[in-house]
Image 1 (cartoon, one colour):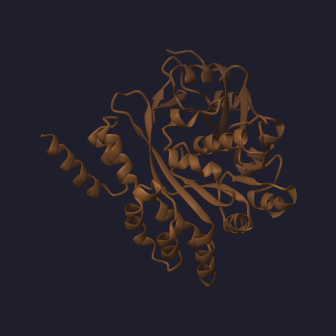
Image 2 (image 1 turned 60 degrees about the vertical axis):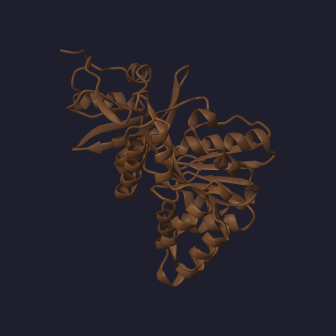
Image 3 (image 1 turned 135 degrees about the vertical axis):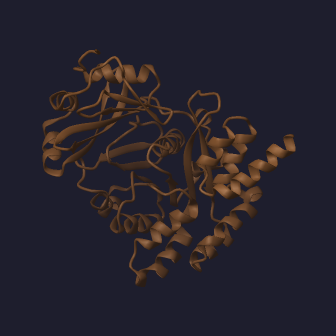
Length: 364
């Protein structure tokens, strides 16, 4: 028999002590944590009753957040625990009971070198206008990459930064830049409504936490075209897929115009994933990087998206672009990841297996 879990702060402290990224609270199961992408029981605790799960989740929620949960059946929010960390939370209803997922967000914004972000991506912080997209599945570190970019701008440029987030994750102090953070649900109704009047707030740099719908994507492209720098995220796994996702959101009669807009405004796509390290010490970043040159801009305009990969490979030396397979192979060659992990992480498993087998054969 374990002990009854009654204190969410205690659970979050234990989660951080074992370097887990997420805590899960669900009735009928022990509290669980995610370590290096795998869920594990917190075995010292008993299974949670519906009342236990509700009490733990409600202990960090405001009355407004509880009301939103009752009306919408889930709610996103963030909170901080002094001297411990910040956390992003989603509390939701499952089988009529309260459940919650809590992700750790460090108080300190990690530096580029520690994150393993290539220097070419750091250069996005020097752009004056256009749109930069950081993409990948949930939990791939998109928010952390964007936070490092914004922190660099904050430290080096005298500009006005506005973020629109759901919820606010990393928090910033004003450095050279002035930085305002708006949270969907408490400071603004939606991403689209926040963008509607954003130009009246005199921004230079805008972060859009997620481009979820046509209205938000349309507004982001317009703002990027009018001489502002826009950073945003999408849940896509490659640069070509990202471009297709944006274009496909629009009705067919608008897609040609959107391709033209995107071919001009797009300044970069960084698609990322985290792969389990061979030595078992956490995960390592793999990143596909596309920086549109004239050839890629023409391919976007002419709707020849499948040809983008060959242009990326040809432009690798010139701009520092790389495909996801090239990034994964580089990590394998350095001994950071295993053969099996490399194949598992790739979107084109047959192609990467051929390349990896050549490397293994050459090694003898």
